[in-house]
Image (cartoon, helix red, strand yellow):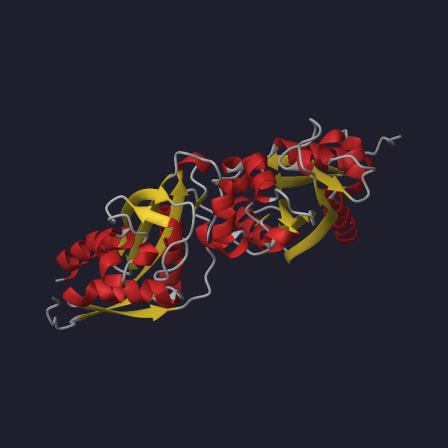
Length: 195
Length: 195
């Protein structure tokens, strides 16, 4: 059950992704932090890692806004596809989609994959910091579930009791997700640093 | 047959791709321009278009080098895959590769595709300029040929006499390629502007 926690910190979250905002807001129920989403038209770099992309994005956002701000970048890394779609997951989702990814894995036995979430935070008084959260699992052979977003319907986390992220309500996904893990590290650091 | 042209201009080409350097050098045989490749460790952005990526890269390169410099970005846009792999062609090539792209197109009838090459040039005295060259064609069902690079072995240009780019020597590819077309526009502009 959730306690009612007084919000004493306001943090800007540079994202236009409403799903991410909802998950992060839900995660923060037990923390004295509230967030405000800021959709900035920044450039994302083509990085090899989500950390690199998040750090670049938050620096741009920070320059534009001039206030403490964080951002998040997520990628789904499929082992047998050399990490594809990785840092380009949202582009791949928009083009070949879930169907394309399932096609690429047809008759593939090792379907191991990992979601990686990087949170980068920047403020005028400190260097950029970055926190990584991961979730290991496998890609199913078909979509299951209606919740979440992106590749959630085909990703079954190892600790998810044979359910995909899309078969979980936000509360359940938030107990084990990559994003929760990166957020937990970030928030722990943040409250230590700013309290 | 190629005339011998005296080289009166030296241009920096921001790229680490030896294949691109060779093609551009070959193209410039008939022009008074010679190039020097400069491999810079810049960031590429995640853009929707090759133009956007080339312009961003050349600005970064120009800031670093402080001299007139150009760069080139190429993408293969497959119609029925929503333009995939598009601006992310080199990442897709490195991960799922040609095999992956062929897999995505299994039993697909409309195999139309387009190579797009954007050349962006920047100098201290002018705003960035960008030139686009395209080559329409189709994706074959298997690899053919050993020349060229990247997705050349599966791309048959419409005006290529039923050969893939990889079945052509550099001279033949350079007569009709997207890169030749962007280079031709760029060089025409450049010689008018700087002569």
